[in-house]
Length: 263
Image (cartoon, rainbow, N blue to C red; front, side):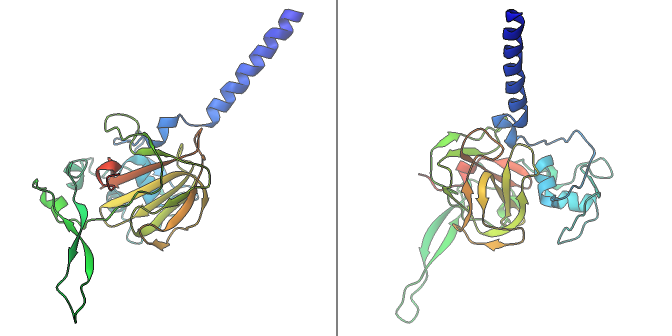
């Protein structure tokens, strides 16, 4: 009888641990991007935006809009079917482009304008990289980036692995800021493993995401500035306090540290 009670206790503990493990996605699962979604379509649920579905499926939001005849401002409704592949079964020209921009993206530099009425004004401009770029990338509007928070990089970007961004350490309540100016196109907790997530559209080419947030200070549709506080760091959807940060170009994850200022 005593042996049975001891085994029952052990079994109970194991069951509890299994349940807890099942309530959280694996630490690295939050950054998985499916370049080839298993399902051919996705049914819209409450809280979804076209941008969040594109992010989840590893697609460019413009492709999803084109395949599903959705015009700007890309309004979708619960129950709507979103096809994740082109009707013809063939990839679009945009998806035939390189999965990411050049390995040496342009960085922000400071230049001086000619004096005006005795004053010298300073503006930020972008110096192109020495290497030649594809026309599609060379013609895209550039973005000036800043670090979204302070802290040590716990885990870096992995092109062939599960982490499609970087994880930055910090304390609960630490400020998270927009890495570049843009518009909030998603804010919620509907993407598995990201916890409370913010997605910002910077231009037609670049989007960024801020995961595992605690308190959030922006809403979908808000236009925000580079360096503006958007959230507090937290641990939603993961097992420790940190910020998971991603940058995507044409729907494809790229290495954030190739764009952020060097520390």
